[in-house]
Length: 548
Image (tube, rainbow, N blue to C red; front, side, top):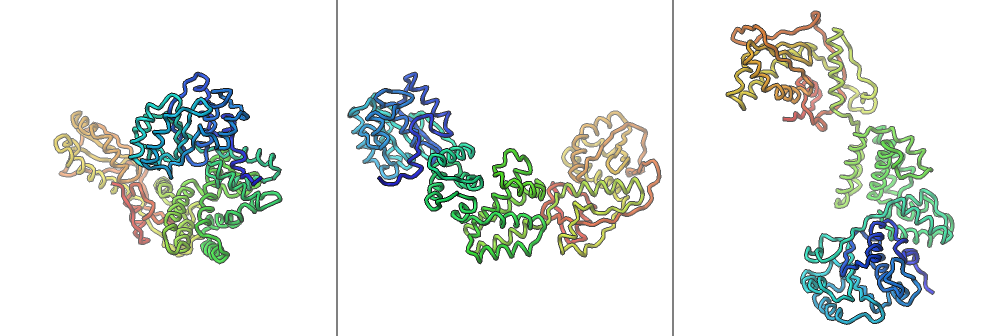
C-alpha cells in the first residue's frame, strides 16, 4: 500500500473531529436533526481550514444508510465510497478546470437523473469562484430550484468573486483560521499516534509557519518527520525552512537597542556570505520584534515556548512601545520594498541603520523642556542637565560636539502677548461682527501657563466668553501648552494700545538655562512647537513642523 500523507491520513471523518469550526458543525447537525436541509450551501474561508472536508462529511451525513444522521456510521457502503471519493452519487467538481458554460450545461442536464443508491445526489464544486460569469448565469435557475434529490455545496477561498445572484441562492458558512492552540494540540495528538517527538520550539515554528491552516501545518510536519528519524527540534525545523538561528536574531535585536551600527552591518554581511536569504532574515526579525513587543505588553498572550521565555524576559525592556511601533513600521516597509528591488540587501542595511538610530517622542521632550523652564522661573537660576533616559551623546557620535543653547527665561511673556495679537487677528477675520470685544481687552500674564483678560463691561465680557474655548484651543495649537485663560470685568484704560503686566509674587531675576538638544525634530514633530523650541532647533540646522 502506498504511503498516505498526514493531511489525508488524519482528515476528519465526522463533524466532531473538525477542528476550529464548531460553529458550523453544530449548525449543520441541528439542521439535519430538524430535517431543514437546504438545496445549496456555500463554504468560504482561507485555505486548509476544512471546507472540502466539511462538504464530504455533510455528504456522508445525508447519504449514510443509517441517515440522514448527525453522526455518519463510516462503515456502510455509501460512507466508504464517499470517503474514497468513489461515490457515483457524490460528484466532486473542480471549478478551476470545469468553469465553462459547456460543463455547466452538462451538469444541468445530469441533475435531472435521480441518485443511484443514495437519498441525495450531491455536487461538491471546489474553487467555485473560478467559474465564469456566463457559466454561473447558466446555473442560476438550477441552483435556485433544483430537483428534490439534489444538493449543491460550493467551496471557495474568495467569496467576493462569487456573483451576488449566486450568493443569494445559497446558505453561506464562513470558515475561520484555526487557532495556534488548536493546531498545536492536534499536532501533539498526531505525534503520539505516529510515534514521533517534537519539542516546544519546533512546534511553535510549525504552528507559526502554518498561518492558521491545518493542512499547511501537517504538510510541514510530514516533511520534518520524513527527513528526521529522531526528535524534531527547533534547530532542525529552522534549517528545514531556511530560518536563521535564533541567536543571530536575538543579537541583532540587542544591537538595535544599543545603536551598534557597525555590528549590525557586519551581521548582514555574514548572513549574505553564508547563503541565507536576506528577505527571510527580515521576516524572522520582524516576527521576533513583534513577539518581543507583545511579551513586553502582555506576556500571557505571547506565543513563545518555555525555552524562549528567558530570552524574552531579557529583551522586553529594551524598547519603549513607541520605539516598537516605529521599528515594526520600518521593517514592514523594508520587506515591502525588498520584494521588488534588484539589491534587497542594500535596502535592508539602510532600514536597519534607521531602526538603530535613537528615537525619542518629541512630545516627551517638549514636556521636559517645559518642566525645566518652570524650575528656572521658580528658582531664578537653574542648570538643567539632560537626564540619562534622554542622553544621546554617548550613543550617537554625531552629537558628541553639540553646542549649548542659551534661552532667556523671561521670553514667554512676550510670546504670549504676541500670540494673543495673532489670535485676535485670526478670530476677527473669521468673525468681524461678533469679535469687537476682543479689541477692548487688557492682557496680563499671570504665569508662564496662564493669562488674564480684563474687560470693562459685562457686554464685552460676554463677547470674549463667546470665543473662550476657541482662544484656549488656539493657544494650545500655537504653544503646545495648556494655557489657562481667565476673563474678568474691571476698570481699565487704554493709551491707544494694550498694556501688558507680568504678575508674580517676587521680581524674577534675569536668568538663563543651559541644556542639550538631543532630538532631530524634523522627522517626528507632529504637534505645535513653541517659538523658543524653533529657535533651539535652528541652532542645530533642524526644522520644525507646526500643525495648523
